Length: 280
Image (cartoon, rainbow, N blue to C red; front, side):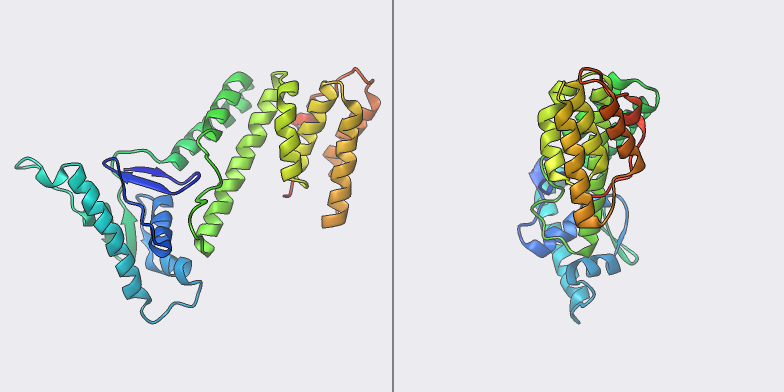
């Protein structure tokens, strides 16, 4: 089974999609896919589907959604020839793939791929490379991890409270990996290459201090000191106006470093190496 959630929901078994088209069964499969090979309690699925106000028929309705997914699984198993297994070989049934467990359900993936697991593996390798100051490897591992994303997580699924929490977690992991990949690229002197990307990111995340710090570094190292200082002032205005906060001490030190440096002198990279608290 191959599972993709870093973009549209895509779950394939034997090369055939088992993703329902109806919104509620899609929610069920999305939650099972995110927690693949682990039991998802009925209470969690019920909360996802009905947000604390389940109908009296909730349990029966959930079982109907599970049955609809199993019907798609049955077609995929038949498509893969599993129903015609040789004598002595145990045949998989839909209930072996979407398992009923005490108190919940589990998607049994067997062999296959899961983009979240691959993302986590690559990001972990990238972070370890950063800690070892192996910036080329860090940039490469983190870039490969980020390339797994084709859009917002589960962008085509109607998300309830449980999925919304999972989506926020994934998006935060994506933003942290992006932050580290940009830092690795800056350590490698790729400041000019980063300017278009950082221009977009600073606009998309107007209160994210570390992205703005990286943008300031890239601008100043590219000989655009005035724009680096303007970026600080723009961020400060947004933080004060929207959150009632001044920029962090780390960011103020970075601004001071740029002010004190000559127009052609790069700001000290050590200011970038300090992790900044951020919001947004």
